Length: 457
Image (cartoon, rainbow, N blue to C red; front, side):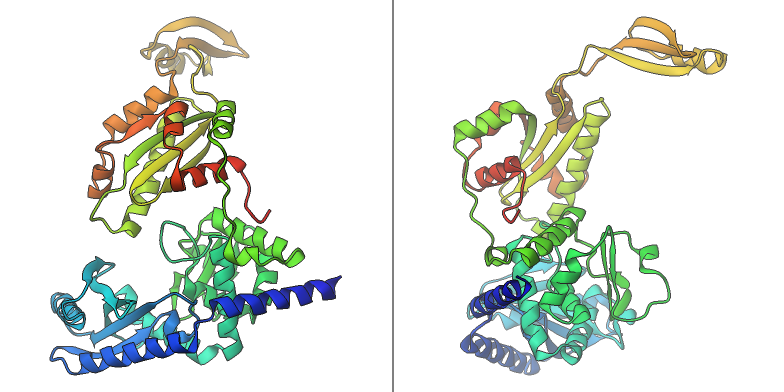
């Protein structure tokens, strides 16, 4: 049985690699474009030193169809920040020769656009001795490249592709804040640490509440500095956790998927599964069994999506707290956006609370605190003593969850521009209102949410 399972896995790996490995012509096109841009940079006057090609495409671990070129324009570390930004943008714009480009923002502004069908980023960075002496976060990138090019074996590059595609299939892969997943560099480090894709999966399946991955010795314990479920210490900068964005939910998804795949290997793990949208009648029936509310808002324009996702999640936590402060039990929350619309989902124990609220006070013999307790402004319906404590039954002011959320939305005083724009036309939706939006990608998301299980379970 074990031999059959291993043979089945190997056959799947071969099939998957045939689908996800870039062709020779794709690899040649990437190299030609880099050489072309490099020559152009070398011919430009300026304060730059040289251009470096970093990222997964430079290391030969990228997936077929990922036509990204991460290029780093390196400057002397003594250059002022003002000149660094100015020169980085000037040269970046010249590279695109009037083509399609835009200014994006990370720690510093940079230029990104399209050249010959490739998504190209020209990111300025400082030349430093090592990752510890960085002046900006991107200064580590050349050291990431050097480390992996020196350490990874040829077969491990293919193993990295397999693990990336596996995590992509279960939606736990990527560096963006939207998915709270594991970035490509982190995936490559796991393969390097464990030796292969298969060994990495075996380890992932056995991870506990928290896993620490070290590729180099470290003086301090990693969990003294980082508190995420997965900690991968960056081998070029021990003060950085490569897996810092990975959420608890995604960490658990990785563990479950790895365990199930090893027991029952199937190609679907690598490419996901199509969500069959439930008929509207079934959704209506399922929603009627539960207590649901939602907030509908617009995803703001001209704001970097990655920055917005952090703000959206913070707002979800605040909205949830507003309900809990009024004694509502929030069973589950969910956030969805196609970066046009935003929907916050709240599943509660009940939408309307009892008129009467029981408040347990101090011990009756504690005269001073009892006096303060009784002096608070509220409509007391009943007062009695229970097990030596003063107990009041008071009239509850906020009984309807929808009204609590509506008050929260209307009174939200968000300072950040993104959330301000997002909430301009925000409104609270009842179950019937949610059904009106049941279409397209949101319909797929709601179906998956109500099913309550992963496609691989």
